[in-house]
Length: 446
Image 1 (cartoon, rainbow, N blue to C red):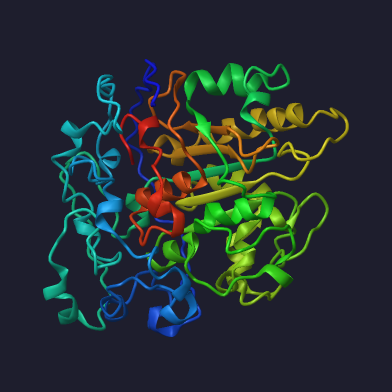
Image 2: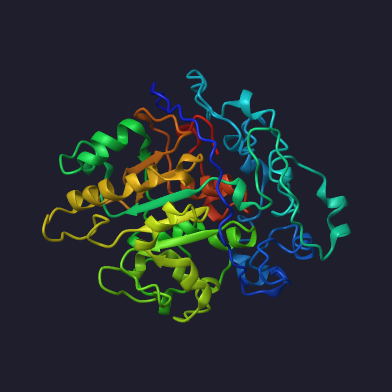
């Protein structure tokens, strides 16, 4: 049953737009999915048109998932009677009105969103073989544009905002912070976590029944799940040397192919090499991106794409100040700050993590990218006892906030599905296709 709690709603006005961040083209280990024009971050129309089944990583590499991973409009629209076409209405509106409290099936503020089905010009430069929101009949005209890179200017229905000409400039910034190994019952009302309980929760929405996927332990499989909707058969914390994956069917691969910028901020890495092994308080098992060959150039420490996208956490503050953060930002604190290890001087895992959050989260909340309808997800990788519940705290100008919570069953698949929907990329990856998204925590879902 879904618990329906009355909550206060965040009423924020933010018109600031985000400049398009630098997003580098990267080959996804198969040339036919790649841009023929260096510097372009948009799918080549010819290659996109030739892949209506969205086998982004080739059938021959992924036949084991062929029945589950294909794009499915019914999944994407959640069988909500057509009521929630996630048309990025948050990018146009200041949703001051609370969602109707008598309709608990994913509040989406439909009145304000219904007038904006043309918001993103139908995502022409995303996966054109399936218009994400508008069911355009692309099949008749895809091949008429063979070989053309589409950089269509985004059209909007507002006169108050001017959007750029690329996907990234029209999308919100998403931040994910991963904490470690604590049940929600050990965080909620814990006197060692005053910032979480006394500052964040009263302004946030949170889930009371968020769990790691069933039996998915230890840490590494959960980080991989947030990136791919599966653990790829991995049930240990071994390094990429033995656990690296050849598949391109994972989130940042889809984002890169769609021209959506991404960056991983890993605390205590050098930034001069692709961090494929533990170093200091950085542990590679908490960095899911370096387990994929298309990110690391097949475990190459000198891979330029990896080095450009997997950066020291210390750079985040500058990127926030300069308004140059990517659209998708995955943040891994070190093992003293993520509640994994007990470290001096506090020698209290929860207190250490809460103290770190108290100094770092305000930097995100005070930033222009967050103010421009950004979203911050704070969650934990896995439960200490069984599969949870574990924490999921969501902050955004467009969440219900005010301490709102629900008891809907969520897993990491829910977070992955939510991020895919925010950015309009498909297919829904592995178990994300079966998951309930986190839309209920929002007044208006991105």
